[in-house]
Image (cartoon, rainbow over all chains, first blue to last red; front, side):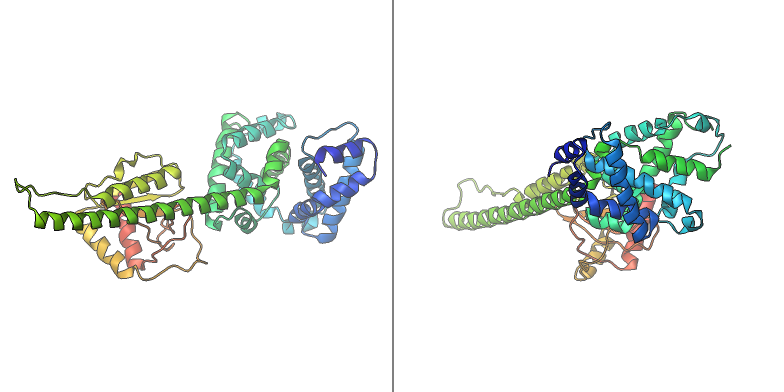
Length: 187
Length: 218
């Protein structure tokens, strides 16, 4: 079933919309959630909450990309759950990713950082992604949005692990430069 | 003031707000990889067909030369002119090399691949920018000895390879693709156009090539 048909079902308040979403995206959603929470039960719970959140939000939202829309919800829910369980935090699947992302944040004053509006930095990241070629963009998004491991990315894209690592390293440096250039961080 | 950790969390959250089209694009990454593999297969097939065509041309050319020689022996030319056939293999193979490297978006001029008899080393760290150095004749001889000695040691298809690609251009249109072990810092492994590398040189050869490249970089 096409995304727009499933969205129509959501808008018609037809509960089969959830079933169709589950068939089409359930596995990907659970996999993305699991990459963050590292617990099969928690991941399943996040996926269920995702359908519920989509059900509540849909009469207002009409997403063009249903998969991406659901994926963003499940990612947010998984991150929130992970942060609530602060004791488990160091064991979460994103600890390594946090370490890598720290390279994108220059040292210095945080004054500008604290005044940022929500989504402002996302537009910088969107511009950065726009400038990348498709392969690099996919690698970046798989790593930092989907929280895939290096091994998973190399398998999915048929690339060597060392190549993926070096691509990510260069992209982090470019992103750090873009963030600095846009004045989000004072030196 | 927020801590560094809070900034990282903020950045991670903001990545979650990227455009849906990028999220959807990455969701279908397997189909992208399949398309890429198909492209490589087509490229490989085209290369094989081109090589077969080259060998056929060379074969026909040789047969023609033999017939011409036989004819000349039977009826020598009046003015005693020596007929020289052009080095067809060199010209055609250089053309192929240029095509290969153009396909890989070579950013330095392909004029490096000329048939001037100079041995060159061509390499890249990230498949975007290619570098090359001309090897001194004494070093070229050493390089040739190493490659001849080790050409029999094939690389296992399961070996991983990374960004570092490395070729030796012999100045006669031929390229060789040794495989360098990751034992000297930035030197890692090599391949040509995503094919698996062919030769697995010893650490001595890796060190030798590394020293040539580092000398050129300095």
